[in-house]
Length: 179
Length: 259
Image 1 (cartoon, rainbow over the protein chains, first blue to last red):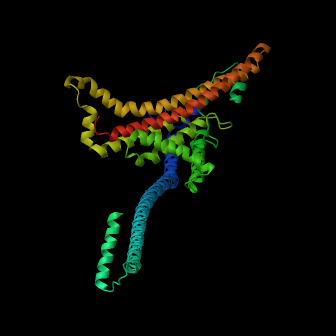
Image 2 (cartoon, each protein chain N blue to C red; image 1 turned 180 degrees about the horizontal axis):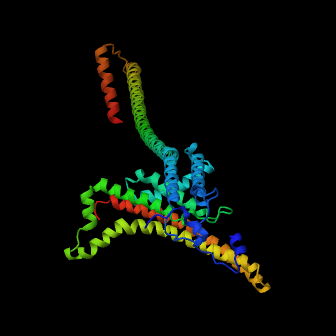
Image 3 (cartoon, rainbow over the protein chains, first blue to last red; image 1 turned 30 degrees about the vertical axis):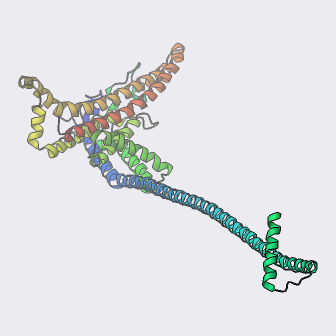
């Protein structure tokens, strides 16, 4: 196929449309190359830059969100731990208080019982002492009275102290036995 | 056309002569309408995309978004998906190819321009030649000349007698069929589409000058011409897409290690 030149239209009727024109081939080559150079140097790099920046921005945003999430989870875990600790501590304090209260009550009870025992003992002792004293004094007085009465009755003074005392004791013993 | 209709009697159906537009200035073959349109397309595409990408930012403006959509389509849906990981090297070429063909095709239906530049076979020839040279160059560089020729002529995994049949087919495919079909598909679609539009619109015009009965038929011819214009729009976009897609496929084949 030879390249028929631009003189085709001069032939009037259309030439074979499959045969290229030299001028158009040149124009096509030049125009396309020109466009290619312009788009490659001016347009593609700019779009690529925007694409990269966009990808980075999206990735950066996602990383930031991920970091925030991790941080939030960490804080939550910390708070949960602290809360559990506080709960445990409160429980321990309550337990301690209960044990301590029980101990205090027991202590007081013991002390009160001791005090009561002590008071009882003291009272008993006092009563015993007073009774002893009363018995002694009664014995002396009754003895003296009885002796005096007996002396008067017998008419004989029993001044011998020892004998007197012995008689009184026997008397009292008899009294107690007969009772 | 008007001149021709006036000069001759009766309806002259549009022919290949309608694609042979005379030079505007004397006999200078560089001043024909297709030539002007091609340069106009270069200016148009350059201006549009430079404006769209000049202040390209993360958050695109409307213009940037428009430009980016086309660029992104060629880059991602054609280059990346077809060629694979080495696609970036070929994006400028494929992008130029797609915008150049698309714009020149669309000239066919843009009012006042109304001539698809690609219906002049020289331009598809040039584009097919570019693609032809590129995919062979890439293959030779990637595989080595001998290995590449061996792959074409003796496709691996085929019984020996089949080579008698297969080798001529493969050689013809790689060196003749591919560039020829690439250019002729684009050319023929644009040529036929333009011819079709001419038939209905010139026909409608002619009917309008005829008897009253013919005058009534003429709107149908125009309506059909308008419907075909929409159809042409689809074909024009599709052809730009197919040319670019096939180029990407040929490049992908050149880069593939296994046939």
